[in-house]
Length: 330
Image 1: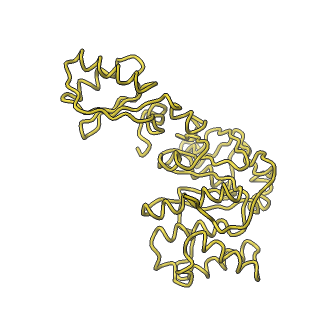
Image 2: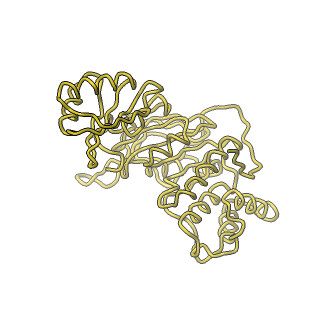
Image 3: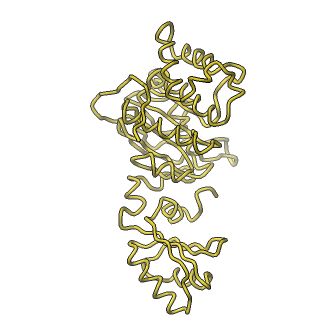
């Protein structure tokens, strides 16, 4: 399916470093009441890249993006965007970025058009150019037919789409998105993800996308950084982190799931063994053939009857469980 953004801008500069972060730290509070939100993060993001920042609530994702957006000042370390330091030259940074916050940043008693006119003026747009950009982003968000309706009448998904439209009015080179699909219906979620992908592919916009939805990162991003308790604990391509083409996740139904889980946990080459409330047992192996062979051997040894097996590529969910010892939404 071809998705058009109806956005006429293109960042055609040679690929370089869009974001450079070194030993970034952010502390809240003082003394015995100090909370470490970021604990020495270092990271580079190339121009034109789509980076997913994946982690549970409270992991530090919003703090990290807020520092890049110049909304927070780091306690220590450095962060620069297109060569401009976020603390030392925030105005230059803001001219280069679009920021779509987790919270809806719209005026509910104004119409979509009025919101865009207000935020566009704050970004230095005016006259015919402002009108052109408003029409452009309304089309991107699929909100042309409701442009003059008050935002307070919008669904959650429509508000999220308008939030995205505000963030790209000034044609940013880097788009920072902090959980932009929280609480929306599947149709609006797909719309938002398609538009973000098209902004990257058609307009060359670099994307930093924070979420706790595994499936969004797997479908949208080139690379993923997994963050937990203020640290980046893994950073690679989605394929590499999820085990490449050889990693496999198996879901098993049987007559004795407790015994199967115990047997699999001591088997060679098996990881991420979980027994679900449904009674199914899931585990990962380096390959599907290895996983099936191990399953047959454990079942034979323990006298377990297997009734169903589903084999799929190992997912980021298993990776996260292995690295942190807890589910993503815990």
